[in-house]
Image (tube, rainbow, N blue to C red; front, side, top):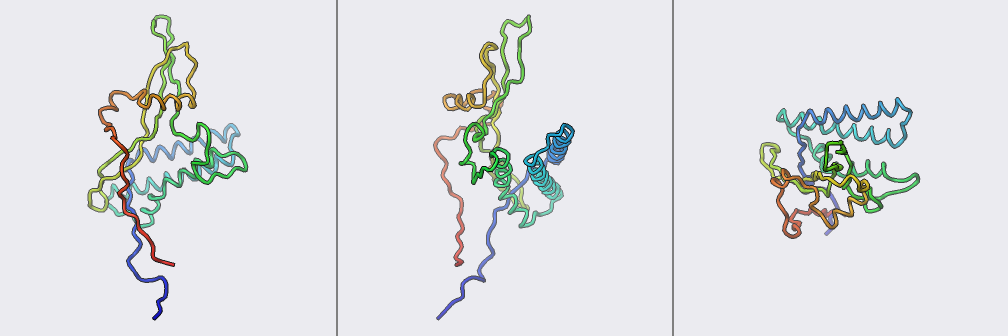
Length: 226
């Protein structure tokens, strides 16, 4: 007996994704990308990296805007669109890697990145309260901590699904005005000993602490092809 390899069998499964259908957000995102490039052009600051990133980001934003319009209109996304959503994290990772890499440097993945750019936790001083009639002079910081997981129930093709994604963790805190301004590197080090620093009270009401590491119980599909 003999058998030819390949062919037949059920169609290859794919993961169905969902885009938050916020038309105003995606529209403004596209406008921001265009406005940023216009400013760079006006001051002759356009680089190859900026052009590539702008083109790629605009393409992704237009795709997400189109998906949003289809979802709100009750139209099903195509298999190709679901597959693009499934790989969109990798697409944005490649855009980010291209921005942070040095000339002639090859970065295979985020594990190859070193320094403060490797983490999403960043900080910025946004207001200095140093008025003469203020006895408690301080500096207001806004920051981002490690990414949090978010769970949302969404409708996909007429069925309700519990979806999981990533969301920025907003932080806000004050420091003495005499202290040196905090850098991204210092902020990332602070989070190692104070992981909850700066979490506002309104965020604590919608956060659920995770006890222990979650187990991966997702299905893994294997191909029997040669």
